[in-house]
Image (cartoon, rainbow, N blue to C red; front, side, top):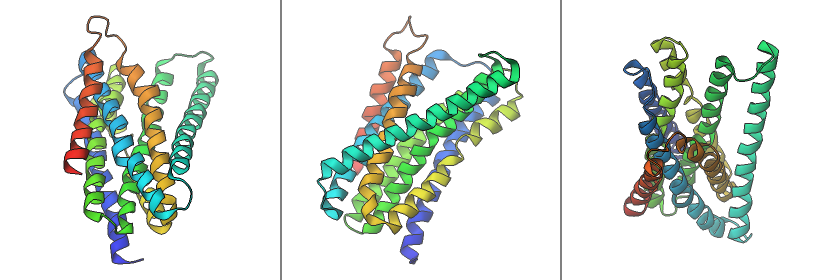
Length: 272
């Protein structure tokens, strides 16, 4: 493995350690607040959804199509579409497995659903699971630099993607730690569990970067795969969640979605 290859994988690790740190900053809100400000949470979750949707196109799907045209003889639209759907199906299947295990745990523990422990386990597992495609996306984006073509633009795009995911990790960290505190966990324990939900991002990033570096032809599919997984998370989880309890301010969360999308689009188009 060349020094250059090691640098790309190491860069992916450093970038996602940064996104993990932002998750920890979000979880640290539990040190100052016990209750969740629902309006602020809706705004942050909406912002996170907007960031993920924009990043899925400009930082993942668009490069996927470009790489498919560069590396493969298969039509780019087939590669992008199949990768996108595969990523969405992977996240759907993973979520179903988590939901099934959560239900079994609930039944084995007390014979009924909806307990505080059950809700906490589901929350932590869900956020942790959703961090996997985010880490994978950053890793693949940095791994794509190994191709060498348009490296300056690709590097800027990878950094912007990491920044965008870091921005949306803040509300995710808070979304774990604050409910834990509300259920009676100590501030310290709630913080530790909240920040730990982001630990999978550096792991997934290193795996994604290593795969992208070692197997260049897989890059287009991997980029589209990460996009599909991120879109499913945003549409199925983040957007419905941010729309809850907002009867008095029906467009508050929508403002967050639009702001997140616009911010990520501006960063990627203007700087990438």
